[in-house]
Length: 149
Image 1 (cartoon, rainbow, N blue to C red):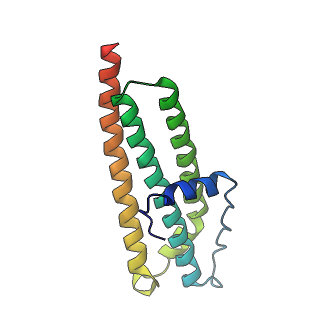
Image 2: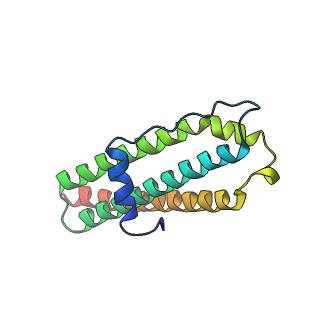
């Protein structure tokens, strides 16, 4: 699935909000396979990237609310939805803690799917940066709305 597909973030949010199953923690130790650790990281970071893409879309919707007649109730609902998604992203990050530590114990040259992981991390970082920029723009718009009232 293309992670930028318009319906993808909504589908992830609904699946996740409907009772996302926590990922089993990686136990750590010599019996662990680097491939399974990297697979767990890839899966977690992909899910996190989709969540942040949805957060970005909600932030853009908030911008539209600010520009088109400030509806406090709708703005608050969007904010609460974003907060729920950010809690889910934090949970995913927490679940990957052991896998991250274990992955760091392997030389990067031995990581399977290393380039794919780098691509996913780049996408995630780009989306988080876009969210940050959009939030800054919204803060300016919100201040203008406050000043006008």
